[in-house]
Length: 400
Image (cartoon, rainbow, N blue to C red; front, side, top):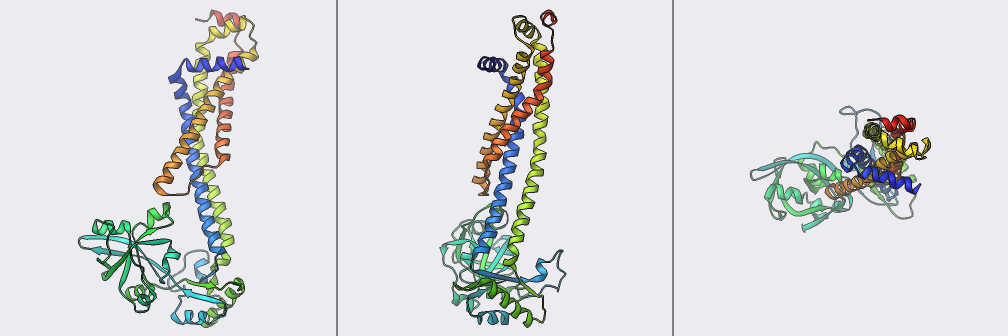
């Protein structure tokens, strides 16, 4: 076997460019599959991790039931929380604190610059909720929230966009036409692809101030932090019951944390299916590469007809010839698959470096790709190898 491997390797290295071009299709196919699988697995892990972290926290999230029903809710059908709801919930034994966050989009202007931004408003501990840190200036306080002060913090990318520098403390911006003093600049502590796409230009302000500026923004989320030792599920059930009674709607609100288990299963199933489908599409490149391997092996058989005849005349059996060409085909595709895994891994590292997306190449995908590449080589080389083994020694030697 060792002699056969050396002979196969010598044959491939004798035509380096042709061998490289033959394995290029396999390399591209495997590399594409590696990147796609890594993105799918990384995305699934990130979403499930986020869901798990929410489920394990001592926080109850109450939302209108209409938001979790199939289909899009009609305008006016979604209940909104009112200040009395928060006062009611604060009276429950076992509640540490109650708060809300508001999300939306608005236009921000400063001087000649104007840009649409993501607006997030809430309590003074919003950095813990929205995953950011204050890199310059200060965070607004409970006093700022209670006084409805027109202050804000902006993200570093937004500061650069508006003022040409990340140092924007003390400047004034106009959010939706309303002037706000910038008291701090922020940086995200949970950067990923979604943050890069949607959260680069962000504005943070007190929830009370946001309600003053955008009174039509409804509060559709109530977060309740539970004291240690309190039965979270029982407390959530009693809070939901009290809110539904207050709004005269027996099915008005629901505990969204109870829906996370089903959501986690759904997310896992959807991302798995998408990864398999897109991976299968990328796998077409492997099939195309296999066709190229078969074509080159047929050409190789035609070029080496006399060599085959001489070897058979010297005692080589048909089985030896068959194994020789199969081995050459498998070596080409296996090396191509291995290089594809390396290129795919390099691509994944590049994606992580640029976007901070938690892409990761699972070992089973790398090993499976190499094994599948070898299988493609075996199947692609089987017909040319059988053609070579069927040659008659005398006819092969006489071939011009």
